[in-house]
Length: 455
Image (cartoon, rainbow, N blue to C red; front, side, top):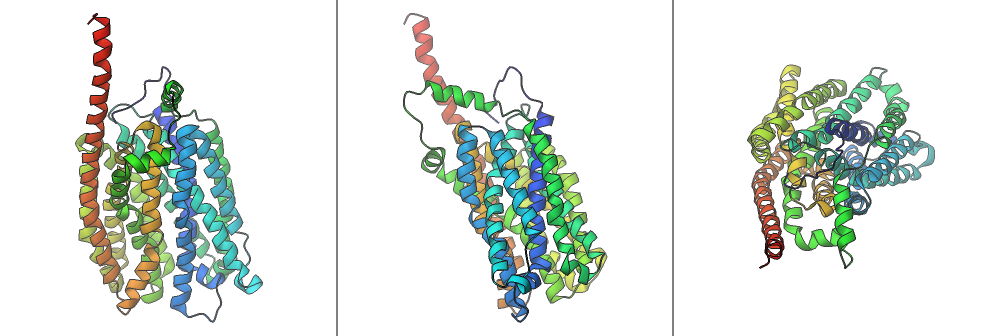
């Protein structure tokens, strides 16, 4: 990145990366636990038994989707705190919010016990999760990227992204374990265990994050603010005024990494079990293997991004998604476990290429004093539009075609093509910002030099 801080006692980049990884792993574990449960059990637990199956599935995914509605709000609120007060405090608050909400979901009564109050409580807790995740990602990315050595921002920024892989691996692993107790036990109490177990993970995450020092960039931001004669604009106002093109382009550049992910996980799981009557345990095991692969290859692809350019790696990943979208679902109909697993692994490999480097790409697009707000807006608005409604939209598109998989797959391909163009545009915006800042620095230096020489 072009504006690394020069703190006299910089924090260890590995310690910062570990803090980003531990927190995002826990938060994404909680988030994916909800996504998995929404795909295979919430439709029976929180909705009437006499409701049509398709409507129950859509309603279940709708509870998942509502959490995305408040993610931009979380990004704005915690982005403001992160840009003005500090990255660390926001990360502690968001982790607590997410953990408490997830634990409470594990204690919720069913529809048979309290009726319509059950889905209302579920939606309320889901909204709390959405706000928490909305503020989490930006801080985790920046605590890693802003402490990264020069030329290594993509690699260290990928540790925050790895939280998604770890969270998915832990979540699907826990649900696979609970499935071993049988359908009856799983539907009655087994699905609750992954949510209740999150309390242990939250305690571990809090220990790591409370010992973390804030990003050194905050020292420069506070010093610059103190020198200003006029109060600064609110970070969100400045971002929307100066960088709205970067925000909007970032939204579409991230669409496949966020929304596409849920198409090839949550929707795939629902399509495989509901339409093709495949084993839920088999598909969960495949998704667990894919999550493990993502965990391994993401930092390697991020290292490649530091060497050849993060934008090139992302574009290659998006092209891979275009090629694999149809085969990913086609093999499900054949029923071959080996082919299903191979396609899951192939798809997760190319998606790792576009997800891992994106943290550094987005962070490069905004000035340090509004960076938390800027990247949070791009990421969370994208999640609200694309990720939150991806499973619902996929089910709806499939139903229009008589249950066929090709409409969701075609939509994923189209979004990926748009993402390629937007990723290349982000590179252009970054180069313009660097050029503008360099010109401004030169104009400030010339009068100073003239004064020193007596001109």
